[in-house]
Image (cartoon, rainbow, N blue to C red; front, side, top):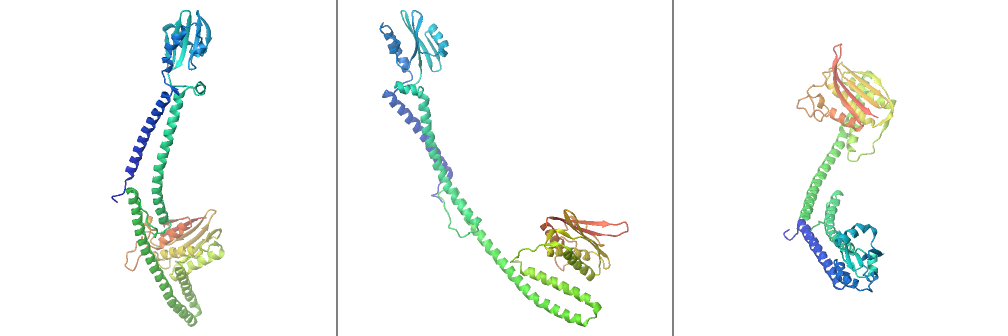
Length: 445
């Protein structure tokens, strides 16, 4: 760890490199510019001003003509006040007039000066900036100063980009190490080869991910062990329960033969309950290997089976089952066993909170957009203190020590939400003095 560098140091180093590179480029550009001037490939910015004295001398020679002026001058040539030759653009007329009055005029880099000799007058325009020594090159590149600045800046930008790309490449390689470890964790491949970095911050993050991977592996091993134990327990229970179920079914057959015909209905109710218990045992045995869920249309056969189960539950607990509506819904697909579980839990809950020989009303209502199951009892209703949380797990008004309560409505709530529905719990009181609870399961189609 002590030999590893910091990312802050990396950025600082590259910042210093960039500063040094900038200074080197500036120095190199200045050095090259001086070489160009010393070799007379480029004239300095004041070169036009330096040549004025020589032109003044030539002007005194009667044989001198403006064509002998260097290419970097523009001019107006006058004799006896009359203009004979002109190369200065008319846009400079204001500067020309000022130069004629004062001897010299200047606007930014443009300088106009006047030279006189007896009857002759020469007005010169030149630029105060570096000049390319070649006339042909000057015509193609009249502003060498900006050209040189753009070239120098381009060289600096190219080097700057290369330095930045180098630093980005280093950071990208380090980030790729983190990405590889993250990909292993995402795919739950916890036996990957550990990554390391020469940079302290990246290495600390990699070590943190390795530590998390180790703890995750331990947690998964523990979870798999628990799941395996649970599966073993489920397999053991489902296997051992089959024996007493078989014994009960066999004795029910013998009991059915010995009982009078009018008592067979009770035995058949017990047989139906045993069949449901076998179904639950089968579903429990398949918990770790879920099959594709079987959905069916809510037709007359399905509704009839639901109501048959409800009536048997009510009869076995001495409650009167009142079915006021039993609609089918051919436009709604469900797992029939899920609705059976909902009905069973709601009926059992109604039985537990009502007295024998009271009524339990059942409605199965189909609409264009919903399917409702409404269960109404004539019992004590929901405790006002917990009615808003009655569907939560282990929430119950019971307080005995027989076992945990509050699972019935919780299971109903989970199954209702499975079908994108809502569970409504309410109490009611009629003018006739009846009261109790109303539970509504409203499923959205």
